[in-house]
Amino acid sequence: MTSYLSIGDFSRATHMTVKTLRHYHEIGLLEPAAVDPRSGYRRYVAEQIPTAQVVRRFRDLGMPLDEVRTVLTASDVADRNRHISAHLNRLEEELGRTRRAVASLRDLLTPPASDAPPGIELRGVGAVGAAAVTATVEAQDIGAWLQGALGELFATVAGQGLRETGPAGGVYADELFTLHRGQATVFVPCDGEVRPVGRVEPLLVPPVELAVLEHCGPPSDVDRAYGALAAYVSRHALAVDGPIREYYLVGARQTQDSTRWRTEVCWPVFRTRAED
Image (cartoon, rainbow, N blue to C red):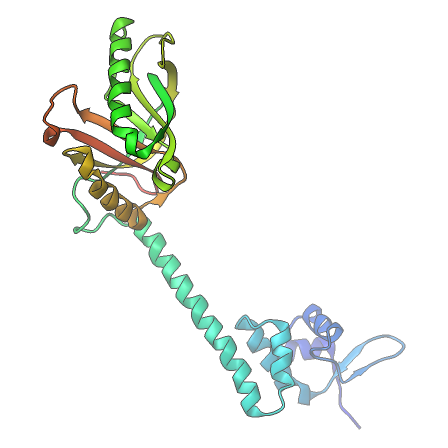
């Protein structure tokens, strides 16, 4: 006479919940040895315990149910091991991705390495009122356009009796870099109400968090600063979508010697740690 285990006893023996055993029965993965036709009660036999333990172990290792079924119904040991090895390879790939993700997140929370480019800082910039000129510009024309717009802005701010409250800056859309044609805005922060005149319009420059690197020298060499800043951001901060900014600390207005010009190149980021 066959000795049966109730679904409750089989659950305790295999460490599978009753709900899980019912589900495995419904999908044909682990069917009971008998089902009472009147009550619907499921009955199992002791010989099914090893199979149930294998199923539970594979599920604990993240193997999909269809693959568990394939392993259980494999024609021979070699075929079974081939399916198990395939899942093992996927686990190793997922582990590698997880390790890379963990390392990347740790980088965001770890102070920059001693070999990081000097002078880079993370900075929060508040909103500021300004006089501004905005246009769609070809990348090859950006230098001449910038100097002309700055001259017009400085003259307008002075002519309207406004006080400059910070260095002039520029906001440059991604398309200027990726397509060599896009929107550019140059602005001069100032107090008071800016009256529109010519190309000059009032502008509230929005707040932003930035990674900042100062470039010393002519604009023709600024690509090196951009490269160093991009490399830093990729390792130590979360880059976010948004236009690039520049701040013109020293320029043609102060000296015609471009080797003495100083420009802050600013990359938008999402800061994850406070700076000292």
